[in-house]
Length: 114
Length: 115
Image: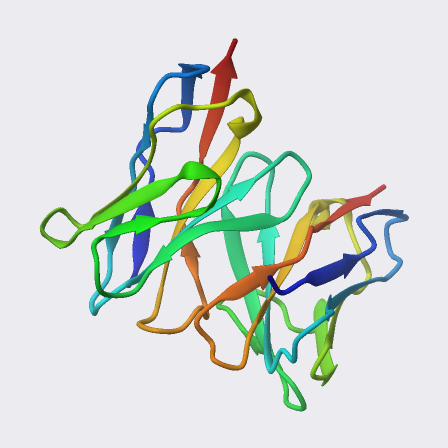
């Protein structure tokens, strides 16, 4: 069965500092990986996705993620965090090549201090 | 990007009544839509998958008679919570997959409170 682990429930960073959110997955085949962001009381917005090709994926809002097959990881990074980045971040995995029946991690809540 | 609209954004209902939540894809045809449930400070749990013109497929442990899903057109899916009880209070989110199927677009969610 597929699963996603986000080890950090809550992270606090200072504005302007770098950020890395961890995501580890378990999947029997080639995974289709996603990072979503959710603001309080809102739906999910796709930050980036990986299916194949270059293992470093660029997304919106200055985010990037690196797929490391050997570590079963898909960590999200941002060089310089802005206060508006404070939100809940979810990593998700789905069947190869299709965004169906996604399995989500438990999420990481990002707090940004000024 | 594609837009998925969910309505209402929030609803309060009395215990024992039914509530209908709509999920619309505004600028693309969604042959498949997904319904998720999110408890406070927890992740999203897939409830069911609905394909246009056919019966929904429910995940294990989800009561199909309680959570009625209809996907009558390529742009609309509805979730009806029947005989709602306080334990059904939750955040319900739909997503719609495009024809190519490589991306799912999420609605803004519906906060249901049963009193």
